[in-house]
Length: 218
Image (tube, rainbow, N blue to C red):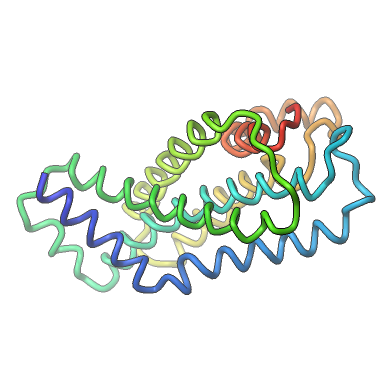
């Protein structure tokens, strides 16, 4: 277990030493989303009865930040190590494959949750929040960030340069996240597109957790 602990600690230090980029920047991005969409569409868009648009938006922004940063942590770590050539220092020690897997994924979960908590702390000042089912928030946030951390590992193994990694993120992760119902209610879509949205796995990671936070029907 020493290999897992050491690699996990190394991954934590890697993103925490540049926390302005890895933690603070996503929080600022979420605030910009909330400012633009919340103030521009608040009062003009009715998502659910007795639920304001800003109240609907904040939980989805939190989960979107969690998922995107969990993916970015493991994928950028592996790709950067391959490009700089220091991946050999991870492969040479007698570390089991499962230790490497859990170290990268757990570090991704920690970064995703750190960003999610930061986004929640900042945005909760804008609206009053109530938790309908706190257990479901944790039950979807932790496995969801672990799944995205695993996808980040796959992308990091596949990509040989940052251009390939950006393509993976821009053409797969980003569209699936934005089309998961973070900024709109799927009930406002035509039946065909509502069915398509329900085929998106990110819909269940973001919308179900957001529903547990804001007590909105899916």
